[in-house]
Length: 254
Ligand SMILES: Nc1ncnc2c1ncn2[C@@H]1O[C@H](COP(=O)(O)OP(=O)(O)OP(=O)(O)O)[C@@H](O)[C@H]1O
Ligand SMILES: [Mg+2]
Image 1 (tube, rainbow, N blue to C red):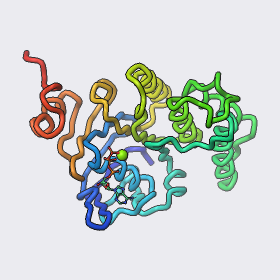
Image 2 (image 1 turned 120 degrees about the horizontal axis):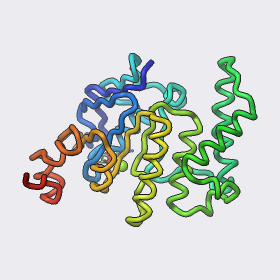
Image 3 (image 1 turned 45 degrees about the horizontal axis):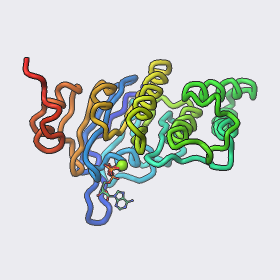
């Protein structure tokens, strides 16, 4: 099964609010997709449908050949989709190492149920590798609740990486950060993608970051796809310039 992911006709309404109005969206295996759009556009809802947090009203989410829409979150995690949240989801009283080892051990138990070997020694090596990928090795013994905001976001990503995802969904990894910390964060994310080459979808409000790191971009607005394509194509797309970006990202004259 490949980790190409494709939503078709995906729809979700909360009472009278149509959060996603039948969107189509595809990302090829190993690629980086940037998902942008104004507040309330439906970006997080898309992640909630892909990860099984909510069931779509209509549509499919194909992971390779399998429709995963409507499966439970644990079933979807086991198929290789990992997620970090808009607000980091961590265990404040555990240290960084304890948190990551906890996630790795959950992963091991699942391997064991399938009769696959994943010895404890390997689990520890894997936890160390994950800690290094998110550059938290020097904070291994710090309680998660005492980490800086940025490091808590990195730990949240590490908890997803502990489960060895083939598709990683990051909901605003740079939210709430100053400019310098923001670039450090996205650089760390990009470095770990370079090493793991998983399929990566990230939601981001900072346009400079999106256009620098995404290989393809989707713009959502009011639950529909307003534009899609390469960063350059999206930057020049008249709908995007008019509805969302203003003129700042228009192409330089040739
Ligand atoms: N659990 C929920 N219950 C009711 N309405 C919701 C729920 N989650 C989202 N919505 C509504 O659905 C719409 C889309 O919300 P969503 O969180 O997907 O947007 P978003 O693009 O992630 O926005 P932001 O950039 O602010 O994070 C909004 O109108 C929001 O108020
Ligand atoms: Mg959101």
